[in-house]
Length: 210
Ligand code: ADP
Image (tube, rainbow, N blue to C red):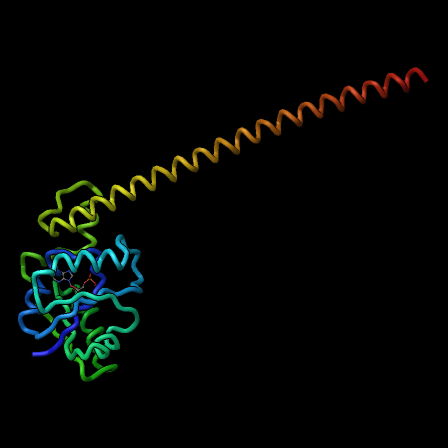
């Protein structure tokens, strides 16, 4: 029995992640769910939001804590005196990347072992990306995530829609401003040209008289 770290993006946590968390918590003394801060992906939730959602989901599992971390996962695990790194394997498609990660981590920190848990068949198709995509198209996502996460996703999707609408409104307004500004400039140019023609006419009249 040991302290284990379960790292990931958790953007947001799904019932698939929770299945792994519950099973990993049973076979380790302590489990630290670690949310990666500097993920290259473009996340829907901030790190603080992801941590808060995970904490709410794990509040009834006494040996699970949730933290965020930056940098190398093995360094974080070492700092927390963890000897196990937990990862979930859904399908062969996960395997290539996961084995590479595990081998790199082992080369960097031989004292930390990666433990793979095979995803329950029930959740083998599930990913945070799919849940977000389904929510965007208005599907019912209650099967895939807990109610707190479901509400948070809907609120985010609504917020994003409102932001896009506001941006569209803003760019429509600035287009209008540019066009009316151009109209005003055209008017001024026309007036100048009219005055110029009048002046030229007067000059020609004077020249004729002299
Ligand atoms: P990462 O960006 O590290 O892949 P994720 O949050 O997508 O972060 O996943 C974290 C871990 O959880 C990974 O080991 C991944 O394989 C596992 N995982 C993701 N989805 C599921 C699922 N539906 N069932 C079980 N494990 C999963």
